[in-house]
Length: 259
Image (cartoon, rainbow, N blue to C red):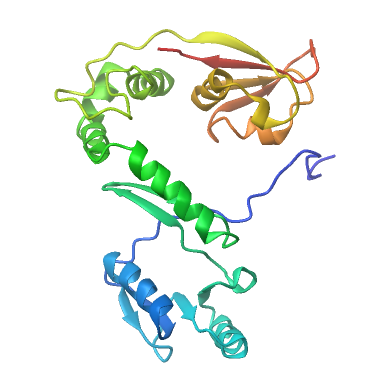
């Protein structure tokens, strides 16, 4: 039925966004260490921290007293302001993630406000894992855009070439220090078809190789009742096609180029 919700559909509890706050006002209500920490974060992003009487699109309420915090959130929402209420996920229109900064690369880890400790622990693991000069790879990709477009006019071919460069063992392996030289000096492999036969409907049962194939897929052919939770491991812009005749339950064919 048109418009009916897919049985296996899973909705995001939040849509991650990167908001540029340089020179923009953000309301901050509260005092103490929690408010001071939010102020430092906002100022690091270039925001202009203002009081409740000012006009702004975003606000952070860092108040310990529940009634005062709830009243402040209500007032701000009446004005159409999106609010983050520290340590009160149910009152938040947006949450602030733990951040790994490899400028211009930013990795944000969020739990919807459920566990700041988990987000912080993940950030610490990623801090140790990601090279300090990871930003150089992003800058090199930006600088090579014209060269990459000229070398690989087809968007799918270009995407596969970049994926091969950045993959484990590739010329610009993301977990190794960034090399020197042009990032465009890499020939892509041709597109290859890979069939993933799922052990179960649980995405956690995917092997690392299967997860990598999905992440790099240009096209996903659903050969069975594959849950959306698994299909969502592919890129949002990957083409999704139903198979004309399912050959096995939970079968999945992925068109992907492997380095």
